[in-house]
Length: 250
Figure 1 (cartoon, rainbow, N blue to C red):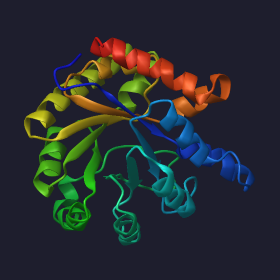
Figure 2 (figure 1 turned 90 degrees about the vertical axis):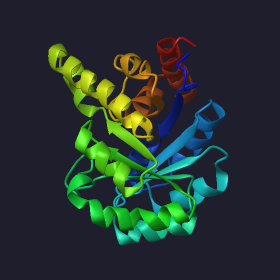
Figure 3 (figure 1 turned 180 degrees about the vertical axis):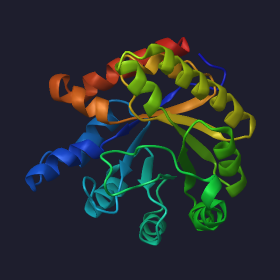
């Protein structure tokens, strides 16, 4: 096992809500998915309350805060509305992510360096309220430096490019992106940041990232929810956990 301890698995339940909202009814219930994930050993639950409420709804956040015994990682854009919601609920962690209404999923990391002063003021009350502040960024040194300067405690590196290249069969490019992730997890850790990685990870791509000893947590959602359709969420999680543990030598 890596010297920094067991790798945590955060399970993102957004896309259970996506399926629910496709029909406008009450099922499938993302809170039930969160409960199953929690009972199956998830170390945390991630939910992204988008400005357009395309999947997770305000009532889902209310329910998660009431029922979870593992930490909630509340993903949100850096808006006044979302700050007010986070300050009302005081989740264990808030993860600041970029958000564009036209995107299907989060397409890249937050440009912290370009918006450093505003973000520093934005996250200060969240930290004061007791939430751990995470910033979702690309694997770039100047973004890590900026995240550190504004007072973020955690950084989550966007692994989407690595995963996309891998699944497109562009393995040389995937290796380049993996090397960037490896270098920047080491660099971020040297700054005192807690390093997380997420976006696009699958059974085929998780091993090399899980092997990075500085990485403390992986956040995985879309793939696990997709696998859950065929094999059940607990079983899908168990396989992901096995691959993560194997990579860490547990």
